[in-house]
Image (tube, rainbow, N blue to C red):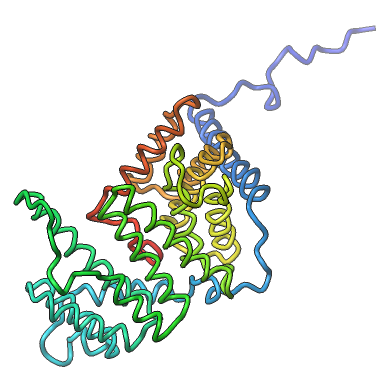
Length: 361
């Protein structure tokens, strides 16, 4: 009987050699892309799904303080733009009276007419006291004026600088009055942020500690008295806990849980994910802050997972640089390095951390 011919005597399509490098490179790129996406998804689900708090099913954007972010962005741009003369092309014509007064105040401030500027802005805010954009503009204008006054006083070697009357006690005094006359979550939020503005300008511990305590008390009133999912207050309170020095005894340290910052910021992240709200930059900023909060809580692996999530959410170079710095921290000195990083953030007075424009930009 004759042997059957061998399968190996001639190549067929099935066992022919691969078709050269281009196809191999394409396959490798696909595999690499799948690995990157898979790693990001794994990190998101492993940490995001397991560690984030539950969000009520009926929660709305309005209840979370995340409604109308695009309109807020547009209003903010108009307020900070210069009013145009004439009728048809005027950007003033599209503004309601409250916003027009605030815009007028910003313009007067640029001309150097500080007293008139602040009067106009306060009049506008009283007409629409719950408008976060208008009140934020007032706080940022006052913050800039006070910052510049203190810088000029240091250059002049003034021992005990005294603010001019229009800046004395501001913006705290105005928001205390506004909250008495029109108490709301928004007015109380800005009053709390005004106390944080104070501690940014005066970082000495004897000012910083009581200012932080006052801010947290006000924010807790908002959260625990009807607005448990109000993201601006949750994030502000979480940042207050995060920025308290880990190695110093603060007035509230005995009753504040070690993971207080992670709880509040984690709730912000969970709400943002549930509602699909916020720009990639806002989402990444929250994720970085949550990672930092987990460092304070002693959960370093979870912290690094959140930094990885932030890195994949937003490609802005400043955020990427901040995350790369965090990746370089070693476990034995990670808390001290984080404290240094937070100190750097508080000292950034050209763009203070209390600027709510982060929400809508």
